[in-house]
Image (cartoon, rainbow, N blue to C red; front, side):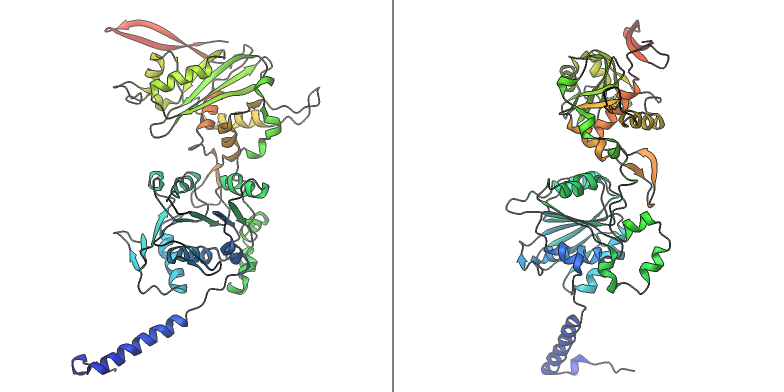
Length: 489
């Protein structure tokens, strides 16, 4: 048994000697720590000076080590690969898909590579670390996909790192945070691209096409880090994967085969037309998607004599319901409006911003005769079948040798074009699979198109065509009663 040392019986010189030995042991332990030598793929990422970097790589390729070092280097204010200093104290936001990864992934990784004895790991009452404070005043704050979107707004930062592809609205929220005067915020996204289909069209494809000079993308496979993996890892893991999954998980190919829902159906050369080339519109419908916390959105969809649809105009405004009504009327005034449909949220009391009135009440007072969506209008199955039908190109050309889709978009309506190209299927949580449902939670223009198509516009009379006109009813207790009367085309 080791004898306990009574420090009260030791001289000052003996105490200083023992303290010196303890410091020396700590120094030797730090120097014996495994040094980080980036592999070929990691080195390319660290060497890039672009403001936005995205790493689409296979499992086990060293993404975590790469992102961890980027976070710590930003907090320390020095990148040893670039041999470049950056301002400190710095604020680094590190985003995981789940909060448990902070304790399970990041903390062990940072202890592996760095001396953290003088760092403060704060939990703030949580079961995992929520932030790390460094002696130079820098802060690393941890967030997750599970937090409310508003948490990502109004944060000033110097670097944001996303571990696994984030939902687009979270990325946009932190993108706004890089506004410190005299600073230049940087962004790093790492992950195996099995989700986040929007990154393909908004980050990866613009980089491939050379449209964004502030983006660098890196796609490399697991083999770049093979020396740090256990023997037989790739062979053993690969036995459980399909060929498509191997391309994603081992070689870093983007998983857009199942993720993107409509992008492969949309061809800008064929689906977008000039305003001058639009034929006579015989009927049109207005669709409205109101919101309490973000812009109200609306669109006008028309149909010609041949039964082809034209997405004619769109509007997005933060104005009050009454002001929005007036803006809306100016937009649809040139067209023969047959129906005006508004998301049922607009029928909620108080949503009109004027006493107990609903959003639709205010629209009606301003002369916009709108009705609320019904259960049938929101049918997911009908909507998917309809949007795929109108976007799909006919297999054979017409008599003029052209393959003309049923839906075309008038140029200048950038909102719907972007929504169609980037919308994805709704991912099943914690699974590499998707629901047969379009994820239009943040696709307001697409939501409007959904309601507009649900009005079943048609230039000919048929049983399936539905229309509504507003009908005034006798007053009850001094109040004017109103209802919608269904009409045939």
